[in-house]
Length: 122
Image 1 (cartoon, rainbow, N blue to C red):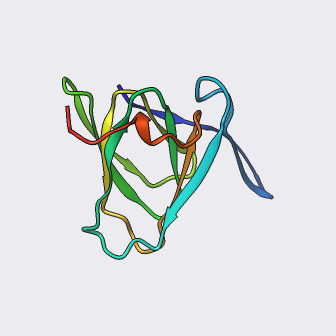
Image 2 (cartoon, helix red, strand yellow; image 1 turned 120 degrees about the vertical axis):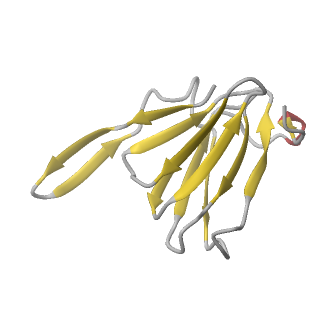
């Protein structure tokens, strides 16, 4: 099941530096970001992956992610660039409640493969 991770952050008078390392199994093979979502009611994702793991970070703004594996269900609010939600293979998810300024970074340990997606909620 998905898990929320507090990323290591180093703070000083010069600002904050947050480190993303050793979070996903394997290496990061793909990264993308979601932004300019039209309204707070807009839903994204509505799918899961068979073998891919994803790490989601709200760089700015805020959004909510619902995750289920068919047994467990959880809601996560991402609103800090020092928090990372790892979505595991087999987890189905919906992303919604985007604020206007949201930039959601997604990193994956797999390249894009349409056959890895499933759309039916478990």
